[in-house]
Length: 284
Image 1 (cartoon, rainbow, N blue to C red):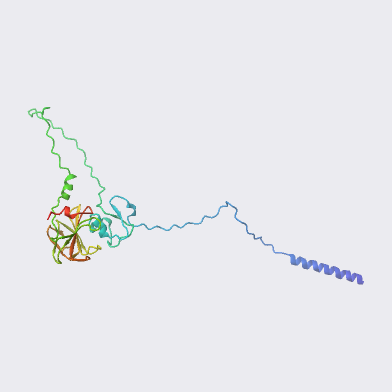
Image 2 (image 1 turned 60 degrees about the vertical axis):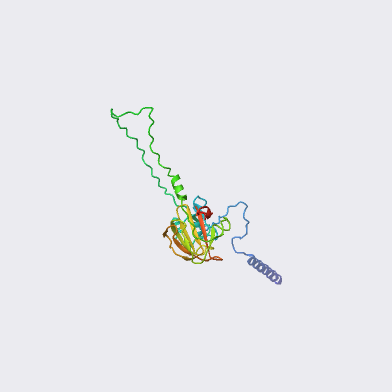
């Protein structure tokens, strides 16, 4: 009996051990997780590229075209206008500028008058053939035909008229400094404070003010589509913008604004380029 009991206890322990081992080794039925490296050449989802809009300066599409100017650091609209022989008001109008004091580097400005794109084509009419009466004398081969009077060249006349200006000296003082195209873009004429400054020719006032550095109280006259004159360092300005003036008219009083002494700085600009005034003014 005792042997059977021992055998029974032994079998029971063995069964209990198998049950415990079986319970401990049981795992949950979960999907395996493993890190797999991407195969070389496998397609990947494209990363969206966001392109920020580029703000171009006004008029950039006209950069480099004839008749346009690209604003550089330090430029002012007045200086740009003067150097291209135009009035600031015209440049403002051509470019539809709301504020002439706000221009930006890289901005492209029109500095020549816009040309109308409209072309008027005149119809070609055939000359009428008029029957000649029998009594009318016929032209013979020996009689040269009378040529129609040729019209004067429209291209040559305006060019001559633009240069045909009867200049006078704007002040009576001695020349302190002459034109050299580098340091002095005009002539400096000495005098006393309050002496008259005269318009060198008939013209229209296109600028009055002190907005151009180094010129002090300045007046600019436009005489035609070719010539401008500038009168700088004045003490008193006696004209207004868009006013018409006559040759010899007093437009200012001599002074020393933005200068080391009393003097008149006088410039003649031909199509915006400074030229030697003494080549245009009468000999003294």
